[in-house]
Length: 444
Image (cartoon, rainbow, N blue to C red; front, side, top):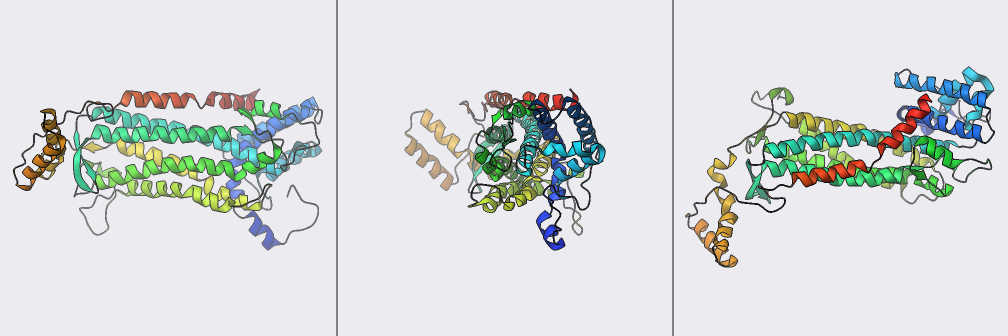
């Protein structure tokens, strides 16, 4: 079954090539397709294209389909082109001609647009929860280990004292910037395209503000041509935010992989969170962190892939956009899996507290010694030369302590304002509006 079927058979090879993996990807969109249809039929009844009785019957059946989807009992049958066709077929089988009425005033173009936007909104809701979970873990670890010193490096050379408090807290603050980008993407996504049809509107007197309110969108995509142009653009915008998150996770994973190696030995994990070698019995491999690094890097590649798929497309719908779903839709599961595994690993991290007792880190305190000279009245350049000469002559014997008090330093990492920044961003998502709208469509 195809919604565009006019009685002419399509060549099997053409059908297989054009459908591709769409049925597989559309399973992710199924609950949102039903939700969009529930809002659409309420609007159709309000403008006289459905009776009140038809609305009640269709609503009951659509809610039953939604329950089947949630229970994992929904499938797109062989020979059915996509989720939109499957849902309409199920309605028609059960309700006859009444089921054929739900497509009035819309096209598959705006139908998939609204499905994707609802899917993105739902996935961002879950993703933000997982970001908050990892953020909280990092802040707790930063506070717990704020006095534990850690070598800082530049150019992979021992540089200056850092601390585990700063290391954990740095990634916490990085997540706030990632969340800022996700918030911007969320707002761009939170605009209703339903009613734009194939991208040129409809001669039906549609009430697009009504479906906007019913679905819990913040506002409309007003211009119907631009609503269609948003396909691909929204995904690319969200992908940029996911890429930023991927960058944070990949860098954290690289640090952890490096720090748990024998040549560093700064951190360790229980045996059950590492893997072994088939030939070397001493190995404890950081496979989890390496896969987080790889998945994070794949997220960073996502905007480029979507950008290349959509490059130079003119206005209007084009089938190229179908392929965007194949890399974009699974990216949320990848990001969430990485966040959850990061949290699990960090929950069980073991931090070494005596790292700087090793004499190899004695030069780590050279800047501290220069600063002491400056505080006693020696000009900075003279102090720099004095300490440098002591190092060259083998006479450098530093006091291995630090006295950093400024904002964001070892002694004052700024975790409270960083947490306040995170809380302020979380409040701007207004998930309660969309959650309430979805609940009403499915129950009232």
